[in-house]
Structures are given as structure tokens and as C-alpha cells.
Image 1 (cartoon, helix red, strand yellow):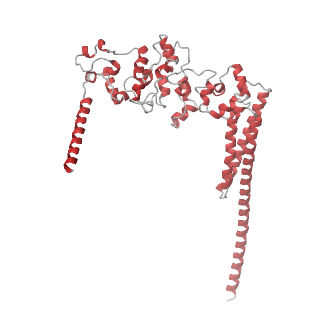
Image 2 (cartoon, helix red, strand yellow; image 1 turned 90 degrees about the vertical axis):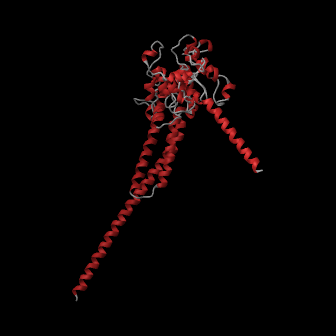
Length: 419
């Protein structure tokens, strides 16, 4: 038995050593592309350096898998022989098919990453970029424009040009270039405007990777400008409650008739600002005034809704202030401060409910919030009144104690005087 176990162990070691030798030989397989370009300088050496971090290299692919040729040959004329499929620099029109040769083959991709989609090439040709490429415009973005050619990293890698924090910069390489975009009749300030938006602040300042960037609204492989009919659905992917309320509101039919882009008309697109109460009502910054002149029903409704929001906001601030004052004075008001959260929730709900554009529905939410805020204010008043009562009682007690001390002092003097 002992000999049998030793035999098995020796056989196992021999097998592992053999597989190691095969693996080493596979790793050291001749590649004249790498050998030659590594000895060069500048742009000719850059691909070899970049490929060190490439996802394809990590999966075992070589230069020849994309460029063709015969990397086993030392003679450049033989290794880069067009008859062996060598292609130094694929044309922009050839790139989607080149990448799609692998990425559109479901059976092939299952061997490497079954989770990856295999319809990117087909989807690309539904995009503005793909349609223009087929029409002969070779200046449009292709696969390598966004993902790179050498040194391609997975989309979830922080250094990938299509990582969430880098997507806008990648798109801006073309779309923010005034000279490059000349002739396409689209603005080139989208990136600058986007950086001022509430979305960009969430993405870059708070590192919230769920915040939208270019491809969340326009798509990636199938990138297109959202149309009037689709923009609300795009925004509604994240802002579900607001979208649902708007779809049931009286504004929906009016926007359809006027062919207005629902969310964009009031909030903007690339430079979406943080929403404030000033957007509703009849003030200078109100968006309602762009459609509703003074005196009409919509104008009056906007004025009323803003007044209700302001009333709840003021009462909430007033209650918070008096409760904070009582707490700093040492009074127990934690329960009242906790209950004040109901008023805050009501205000938040009311600000979302604005999208229903119903005075009655808004009032049904504002009224309970006002009641909670008023109770909180009264609780603060009672706490301060009790504090005042305690202070008066303490003052009276101190005076009485001082009076007793004075009488005691007189009595002591009297006793000492009789000795």
C-alpha cells in the first residue's frame, strides 16, 4: 500500500511538472511582432507597452489575432505578409466587423465571458455613428474610438475610458472639439454644460456611480439623441415617481400637442440644475411662466402650490429652531424633534407631487405636515416655558436660602454677644 501511494505521488508530481513545462513553452511561444516592436521607439513601441494591461492579452490573444500575419517568422516580409492576412491599420469602416468577428460570435464568447452581450456590432449600426459610417463618414466613433486599440481594459476597470467616471471625458474627445465637430450641426458645449449639472456633481463629487452620464441617456453602442417621445422614458428610468405623476397630469396632453420634450422643457438636458422651490410658482426663476401668463388657471395653481410649499417650509424651520433652542438649554425635546421628521417627509413628498400639478393632491400632503410642524413648535414653546418657570423657581429658592442664611448670621451674632 505504501509503495502504491508513493507511485501515485510520483506520477502526480511528474504530471504537474510536465504541465508546467507545456505552460512555459506556451508562454514563451515566439512572437516576432512583440520582439520587433519592443526594440523600437515612440509610437511603434507604444502598442507593446500598452498591451501589458490589455484584457485580450490576459485571455491569451496576440497581435496576429487582430492584425493577421505570421508572428513565428523573423523576416518582416514574411511575418507581415498580406497573403497571410496581415493588416497594419484597419480602416474605420472595417473595425466593427473586425471586433465583431469575436464579439458577435456567441459560441466563441462563451469560452471567455458568457455574460458579455454579443449584439454590440448589430446595435452599433442602429446608432448615429454606425449609420454615418455606413454612409461613408469615417470620422465618426467606432469601437476603438471609445475602448482604445491596445491596452483595452474591462468596462468596470477604473482606468478604462468607458468606466462610469470617464465616459463623459471619452465622449468629449470628439463632441467638445469645435473644429472636429464642425459640419455636424450639433453644439460642442455638452460636456461643459454637463459638468455643471446635478448629475455630474453626484458622479464626480460624491463618487455615485449610479448617477447618469452620457451613455445612460444616449446609449452606448446604439447611441442616439433621445427624441421628444423617448426622453421622458429615459429620465423615468431613475425618476420613476416623477414620471408616473407627470403621465397622469393635465400637462401630459398639452405637452403632446405642443410636441415638447417633457422633462427637458422644465429641467434642461445636459446642464440639469438641482431642483428648487423657485422653479414652481410665479417668481422670476419659475419655469411655469414660460407657458402660463398672469391670471390664467395654471398661473393661479402654480402660485397656490408655491405658497403651500413655502408655508410648510417656514413652519418646519420655525419648529426646528425653537426645538434646537430648547435642547441647547438642556430641555428634553427628543421626541418632538423625532416627530418633526414627519413634516420633513411631507415636504419631500410634496416637492415630488408637484409633477402631478394638482392643488388638491398637494394640499392633502401639506396639511398633515403643517399640523406636525405646529405641534413641534408648540412642544418647543412648552419646553421653553417650563425652562422659564424652573429659572423663576430657582431664583425664588435662592432668595429664600439667602434670607435664611442672613437670619442664621444674625442669630449667631446675638449668641456671641451674650457671652
